[in-house]
Length: 203
Image (cartoon, rainbow, N blue to C red):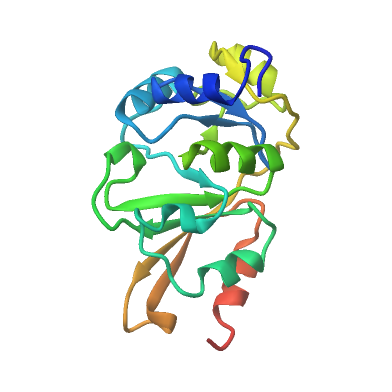
């Protein structure tokens, strides 16, 4: 899986001990750890990221986080209507989690890059923040990004860079359409207008 590892078991041991891995996505190289305290400690320290700025979780499919978040019935259809991997959706947590994962709201991104999907299939949900120090422009190549962060493990690959995913938040609200309120938090590869156009079609 990387030039510095020799198989799935070594990667699993690395991640379960709080280690980090850089991997390709459809937008920017991702910096991954398992959603455990030691991994998050390592990630936030490596990125020099404030703890009040939560990171998202990347998954192979939305069902991987069915025990963590409340999933709207329409969500898969919604996500399938846009560029795959282009939207990160913030959903209500079933139970509060580490504040570095959002506390009562967890951001979830369904991967589209084959290598990222495989990583999530083999090891479960993994953090999906960009592989760069906060305030530093990201690299396209995962090997360069890993070297810049002094992260020993990476999945080889080159990313298109440019815009990241579009962040939306979904909140339970029976007074709103579909029983949810949608807010676009950050525009990225999927334009705000496209999201709202889908949202305003008859349910």
